[in-house]
Length: 147
Image 1 (tube, rainbow, N blue to C red):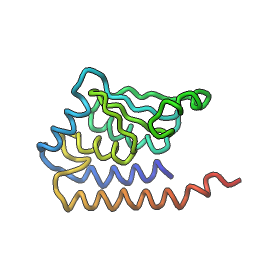
Image 2: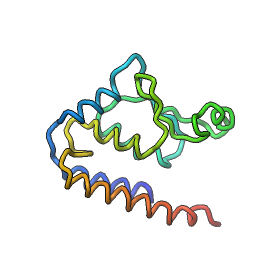
Image 3: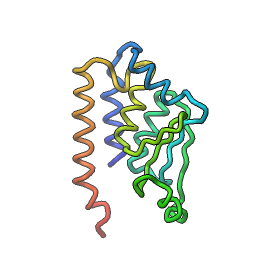
């Protein structure tokens, strides 16, 4: 289910052709500039971090994909800001803890402007698709864990 919604979302996004802009440069710099390297910490499953992984890859942003084994989660949980994953650590050390904020930042950093374009009308379409995906995910989630 998640893979289908991600593919649908990417199809919408790749129809957008917007030039590189200042916000894109700022987002790109935030994800690539600093003393460290961008890292994304999540379990070794698709889940909510998969769309962030895909978006970073499509945008050409290098990152360390830290997969936390379930056997290590109780130890790791105590070190997280809110006791949950994903967590993204920017090269400047800043911590991001919300997957949709990570997704938007990664989309904004795309130098070709196709993932999160400057055009407000196209962004509105993307925001609608993201909202619908979140609504459908919440609706389907209980069925995934029953029997």
